Length: 162
Image (cartoon, rainbow, N blue to C red):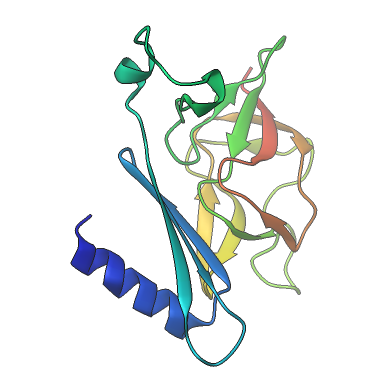
């Protein structure tokens, strides 16, 4: 990202009315926090990510500073001590189990899902994003309550792929 793109992002966030937005790529992490008043001032924090290969050198900083390799958005990961798959949130926003308040939930515990089936919707900045299953299997557990805020990479569902 160049400085022009960052400035445009700051202006966009300030006009949108969002109080905080985080953007993370392989090289950089940006957090933009806007004040609640009408002045439109925004505070921006930039964090330069250290590539994993560099972090493994003997002169590496404290272990807490080493980046954790992240999975692709919505990519399932195997949980410890089981063959279950965890489906995680690819974005921050508000989690909804239903397409609208008067419709049934996309999935319930025990539902069979196929790869590409919509599991839920996450609203971010007035946009509704369908979260699709990356695996076929049976929903074992729903980890988030309806209409709850979710963070990036937060576990949403546990799926049994067998």
